[in-house]
Length: 533
Image (spheres, rainbow, N blue to C red):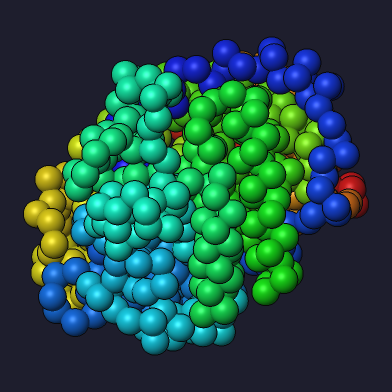
């Protein structure tokens, strides 16, 4: 969602840890919601977020489009598990693709069409079929908290109080405090541009909130969801999922959750394996109840904890935070599937956050891709694209070439990303960030333990190391990440007696000697007990 949101990502995550176990103990595990289970995750389980306008241009107009994504599917997943030539992602998240007057398209004017800039419904259906053929799931951004102020519904509603569409939106009455502020201090009541009165808009005047107290609105949005599933979508990323009903009160949250239960139940009538990932940008205690109706929620605070730890060279409780939040989420739904990520379209890009240090970017990726859940990557993250606010510069054109080339989008002149960072350059470098991502995603696909929901923090004996155990069946992996700029030597019981083997390391300089292991700076190590010894 495009917004001037309060940023809590790199400073507040660990403040909530002591509270989580307490909160979870009082949560109702029966909110598993009628046996609700997440869809079966195949392959690596890694999803890839795409801003369509910036990804790949199929027709030379400078804008990315749906045909362009279809043409670049082999880069993302070529359908050949052992080719080593693709990212091997299991899913795509397409940012908004409906018609819209804005560049970002988070203000929709037609919920049943594709923006002509991106192509046609046939292009969408083709992409769905080709992705399915390669075993790739596709979810699309569903923006139903609000419409565009240019939507025909709002135009009629704002001009005619007697129209049925007037009640599609939220209007002030004589008791309304027009100076009311939203949750990050923003103005939420806006003057009607086409008549008298004020309407409610959480984000800005160009995005009037829809009135979900109106049964007709709920019915319409269920119709919208079913329509896109019928076109081939596998599910939705649900924008602003916590803002559907006004206010941050318990009553408002309960109504939100009831709505998403209704929505999920209706979507499952079309596709029993529909996947719903929600955006609830808040503390874990607020997020947790949404795991009743939704399969996944984006873990903003975990991403902040990872990046803060990598930046500062000291573990700020990555594994502890991940474990406690997962316990909390599972108290609401045993099938909860965390959605960890490092950055998205609203946040400073990873490489900018880490000061352009490729070693740190590789380490952050290693941590993300060895934790539980269904990780999400933001396009260009795998090659180290940079970007800082304003939002347009977080969404710069994907860099395919060192110079110009077919498919390169040109809708925006890059400020942060030029030819020195590109897919073309990194394909020729076995030590590139891109190759690191490919290797880590393949590793995740090959080891059930890395895709499981198990996580047990390990006390490594060093503040600069985050360590944890991942288990699935008979497989137990011990994961160590050195966050510091110096090598770290750890004591590992019986390591010198042949009871352990190195499964994976990001460095060839790992040294094992007399019950100790030395992990080089900014490096990761995965070991496994050798039960044959």
